[in-house]
Every structure is written in C-alpha cells, then in structure tokens.
Length: 104
Image (tube, rainbow, N blue to C red):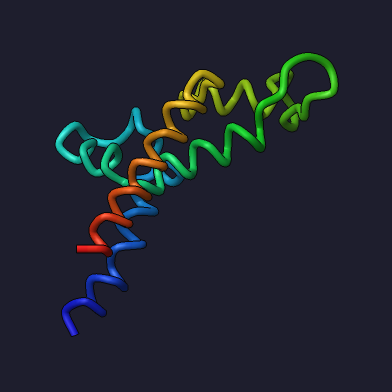
C-alpha cells in the first residue's frame, strides 16, 4: 500500500524538478537538490540536446524571432553540447546503482 502511494507520487515529483516545467535557474535553492538527484533531469537534458542541437543555416527558427530553438534552449535551460558525456555517465551510474540494489 505504501509502495503504491510512493510509486504514484514519485513521477510527479521527478517531472516537476527535472527542469522541463521549471528551469534549473528558477528552482529555489532549498529544492535544487531534488533537481540534481533526479535521473529524469539527465534524461530530459540528453533527449533535448539530441533533439534541438543545431548550428548554422537550416536550423529551426522560432516564430516572430531570429532565435533558433537551439539558441533558446541554451539561454532558457542552460543546455550545452559539452554536457552530453557527463550526463550519459551519470545515467549509467544510476542504472548500475539500480542493478546493485536489485541484486541485494
């Protein structure tokens, strides 16, 4: 019963603090730790970087602006191509932790 309640509540917390609804810069300092311990944060950032990254001509430009979606993501969310490898390693670490915990 308790596990079911936690399982229903946990995805809402993860989605709230992964940076999609509220960017990292707007999360209060006393809640920022939830952003960093959340595996969904790194999955969201990696997926967004892979989807939006674009340099040069042919990039998608946002309506009524000259800003590309990649430039907007860099400014608003703080995305960077340099984050790709560290975030993959963090997600791999989460996976290894889960495997170890399941074996115990």
